[in-house]
Length: 398
Image 1: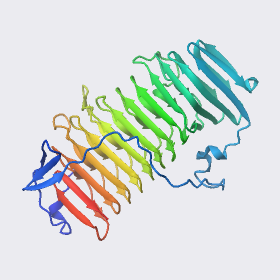
Image 2 (image 1 turned 180 degrees about the vertical axis):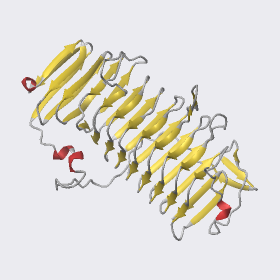
Image 3 (image 1 turned 90 degrees about the vertical axis):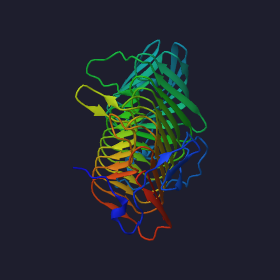
């Protein structure tokens, strides 16, 4: 049985359990002590980031995650305009069919790049490929009322490049038209990896399923600006891992049971600024319940550096929720949960195994439940510069 971590059990903290609730002036109180309840909102301001180091050794495990290491030799441009689309470039290398502004591409070629621009309120692109490829968003606004706006049916890498200085928008409708034998799990869906780079902006609106979804893993690199608003399901969903190396990421979810980031494997955050605003409540099913969360991993959550801000306001919402361990090595972590306890217990930061807070700054506040819920052991780094703790809040810095 899981046990709620009681701070009084660790002499190093020397703080008793306190009853704490938020008031109208942005503070929580416990035993006469006021605790700031941080205000967390969408933050699209620019973020200064160090230049990336691109691996050049092809034995590096991340070598193939970089579009710079892909040898692009064929370039195709697709310009959308209302209910039509025009293709130019090396079009003879692939098979392109269109129905209005809905494009299907079949390719067996290597080293192909597709560039999308223009707009359509009834359009999409679906790609079948036996090889990895580059997909550049170069000022595209694409809405598919009956399915995914971008649908990668290739199990190889999708290099999604946000062209520098461009603004791009993808959205889906509330109802998908199914295709036999195919998945279509979100506005931007890929059977393979999604490797996002570039210094452009991507806005995704998900009205039926996930916002950005991969049946493999997702990597976000520095320089990207990504905003996902999902009213139905998760903002970002991956089966085999989510790695955030940088960028400015804002995820807003309102569906019951939805998560800002939901991964069946590990979530690794190495930089950037990730903000999650979750207002959904617990999804009550016939024989089960599924709670909301800002960041949810079936395996381990690791934060090495960067800024992570999470706010959950719905019933039972959890800030961080790990099926294994949570390791905070550095960075600036801020978690606020304000939801009530009814079908599911809201928690600030929850791990089914251990939590390690070894560096950086860490803030967790839960208005109606535990700021920390750890089934195993809480491990803290040495020589913290400050600590404040109670049942409903946990603050520590190094």
